[in-house]
View 1: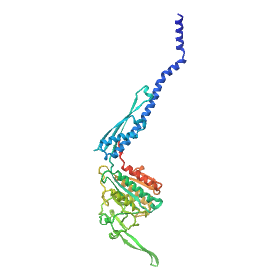
View 2: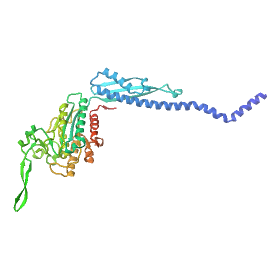
View 3: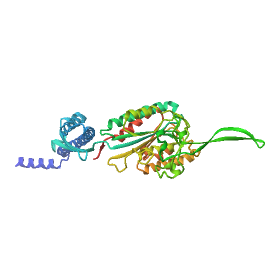
Length: 432
C-alpha cells in the first residue's frame, strides 16, 4: 500500500513540475523546426538552380538559333545538351538529364525545355529526396532582312581628336558584324551617306528627271567706283548640267522648303527636284547606295575626308533617301517586305551651322527635327550618335527611343558603340 501511495505522489509531482516540460517540448519541436529550416534552404537552392538552368537554356537557345542553318536537327539537339551542361554550375551538371528540343524550320523557331532534380539536404528528413526544377526558352533564328543607312558627319571638325580615324575603324567593325550575320544573299545591305552642308552623288545621275539645274551664285566680287562711290559688284554664275558633270562637282544642296525635310515627290515640280550646286569642297565623299558588296563599302569608308560646315538635316534626308524606293535611289525594298527592318545611324560632332538658306543654327535645327520626325514616321529606326560636341537635346529628340541615342565623349568610344548597335540590329532573338 505504501508503494502504491508513494508512486501516486511521485506522478502528481511530475505533472506539477514545469521545469522538465520545457526540455521535453523543445525536444518535440526541434525535429520540425530543423525540417522547416532545411526545406527553406533547399528551396532557396532550388530557386538558384532554376535560375542557372534558365540562363543556360537561354544561352543555348540563342546559340542554336545562330547555327540553325549550318547544322542538322540531330546536330543541333546534340549541341544544345552540351551547351546547357557547359553553362550549368558544377553542382547542377550531374542532375541534368538532357533537354527536349523542338525545331520548326518553317517558322524559324527553336524551343528548348529541360528539367533537373536538386537533391534535398536537411529537408529530406520531412520531405522528398529531390526538388524538380524546369525551364524553357524559345528563339527565332535567321536574322531579319536589314537595310541600314550610315549618315556620317564629314565636316572639318571631324579631323580633330582623331574623330575621323576612329569613325572609319568603327564603321568597318560594324560592316564586319553585319557581313558575318548575313546568311542569305542580300539579306543585309548598307548605304553610306557622308555629309557636311551638302551631299555628293555620282555624276552619272546628271540626266535624271529629279535633277534640278539653274541655281545661281555670285562670283568674282570686286569694288567698283560708280555714281561717285565705291560699290561691290559681282558676276552671276548659273549651275548647268555640263558644269555639274565636271569631275570636281556632283554636289546636291537642300531642296526648296518644305521638301528639304522629306523624301521623294513629283519631280515634274521644280520645287521638289534636287538642286545641283557647286561643291564647297570637292573632296566630299560620294554617297554609296544600299549594297552588300562589303569590300566596296569599306573602300567608300576609306574615301571619307573631314571638310566643311554642318547641316545635319541633309544627312538625315539623304540617309532616308537610300532606304526608300523613291528616286533618287531605288535599291531599297518596300516596307511590306517580310522580315525587313530599316535602320539609320545619324552621327555628328557639331551644331548646325549652314544650309542653303541660312547660317542660323536654330533655324536649321528646326529643319533637322522635321527631317528626323518624317523619317521615323516612314518606318525607319533611327540611332543618333553625338561625338564629343553637338546639340545633345536635338539628337536625343531625333533618336527613335532614348536608348538609341549615344553620347561619345572620346573618339575611341566609337568602335564599341558601333559594335553594340550592329550586334543589336543583327542579333537573333529570344521570344519566350
